[in-house]
Length: 143
Image 1: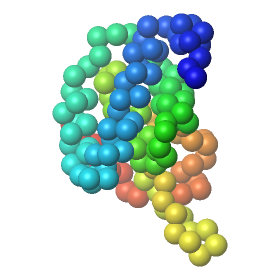
Image 2 (image 1 turned 60 degrees about the vertical axis):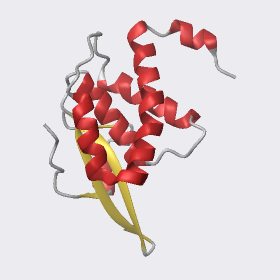
Image 3 (image 1 turned 90 degrees about the horizontal axis):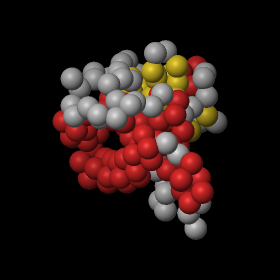
């Protein structure tokens, strides 16, 4: 059951961002599954060219809202979907986030992870995520 008291306490910009994340996260998850990363990023680039007229939230606020939506989603939202959702939301607010993808080997198993960095800091992840995973060379941002 939704917590309407918490919803009412959110500022208008936070409500809008929360709704945007609730729409973007499942759409991006489906787009990645059926269109792949390149097509999905190209689509999101076209979307991100439209700047939001509202007061932008801090990157940390946006990250908390995306994480909250991902925790409550009725499906498992992979890290790449969460990262692309946050990247798109920040770009809509005029920021220039960096999508990072890294790999590591744990007990013989290959693991990959995606995260967003903004002004040198990881969002929605531990501050040392780039030390836990070997990041690929920077992905070319769509601009």
